[in-house]
Length: 361
Image (cartoon, rainbow, N blue to C red; front, top):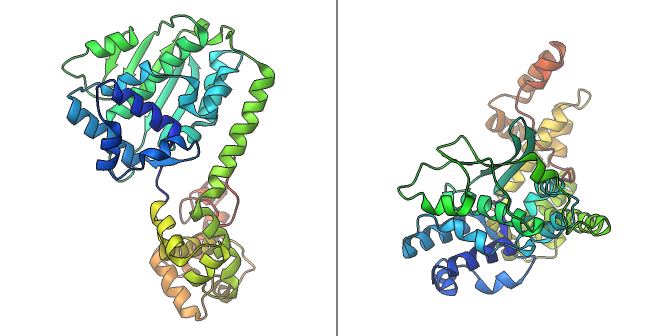
């Protein structure tokens, strides 16, 4: 699985927030092995874990346990990459937040957002995921503070929240939270969220511009597509799918097809959290599921399409993947199908993304 990443635009916002504490951010980046100059590249990305380490180091050096709330002081649409401008040109904050949810991955892949209308008002609910490291509370608190500050900046007026939910435990000093949100606070909540008055979310924005909103939607959609396709993992998987029916692809063959050296291919895959051998194995496993779902395909055909010269190697790999022989797997699938659609949906294994299809927008 590829490591989750954060845009350089959001990372730049973090840097500005840390500078309020008088921290030497170029020195912090050097200490963490990060490229400070990459902040000037709008297409650069930083891993989620590197941002976690940055927050942790900043808290340690500054002693500020609520350092993430500084993000509210530096927020501008540019902090959100192209998504910020799409939000800015929306008719209302509610429409803008719907765009924010749609394009969230551009800003940071580590966060899941939902926006919904309930009896209490509109809720913007945030979940931050870690990779190898658990996420720090500063990531979520920075996002909440930033979202509120952006609402005030775009609307040109103070937005009074109904309440704020913070997943982290209540800190000893809650004064920074009172200052940042000026609303009832609920700590130890099941998730991080801002709850808005419905009228604030549905009021027209002075920055609304329908033509620009359409243009920014296009830019954001194109960026998402380019971002997915630029991942070496994605491109290498597509090459593997094409090559497997001709036999097991070698790393040098895939590197050549991608116009990369073997060393560069291995390094790029490593940066995205995988390796050539792991990617090959994962691709074969996902394809094996697709092939065995086709009743007319023989096990021998499936073995050769997966690049196994010797069918016994396919059988051994299959048992390692699913703890079943291919024949047992297919039998269970047939039984699940005959039991009805619900049982079939729960069948032999959980649904996975097909190995050789383009990602959904």
